[in-house]
Length: 193
Image (cartoon, rainbow, N blue to C red; front, top):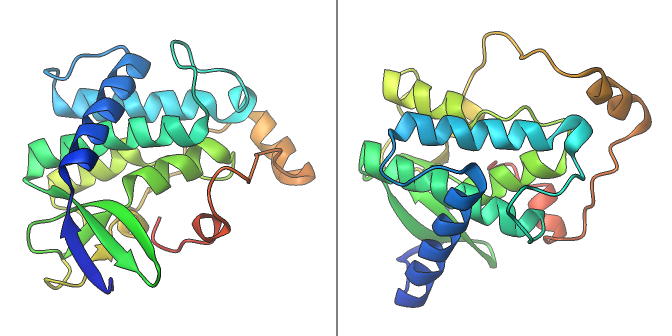
């Protein structure tokens, strides 16, 4: 549970607007599309970057994976805001601040930027962006008590794993070449994503 919570500052709101614009450029969609369609496109782009395309540049994007994670995570989180009435907040966990999208009663939160970054940086993480959105919409995510700030992504359950490329198996055997120096070491061990 976080030690504190705050709203986004005006500057942070402006930055999130820029992240969203970049994210929409990356998925080649427009903000007025159906929310589920937008989330599915975010999910598909992340999947394309995994496996054989892990180090391929993202079409129309010049930043690194951390920037891509912020852009795509913001697009995903904004759809949670639109569809479910959630809101972006900043929570403090120990000494670190994290931007999360939170349910109104603070029962569930999504560490969208952190989760997308983990997916982009590793072949071992099976991206569940679209699945989480659909399960939340269908009421399949187990209800949590208010004010618990429970991370939603560990509650997302896939009945059957997706078919993965053979290259993923290769990386599992020899190790993933994912770069691990773009975010702090704490992000790699985060249990909340």
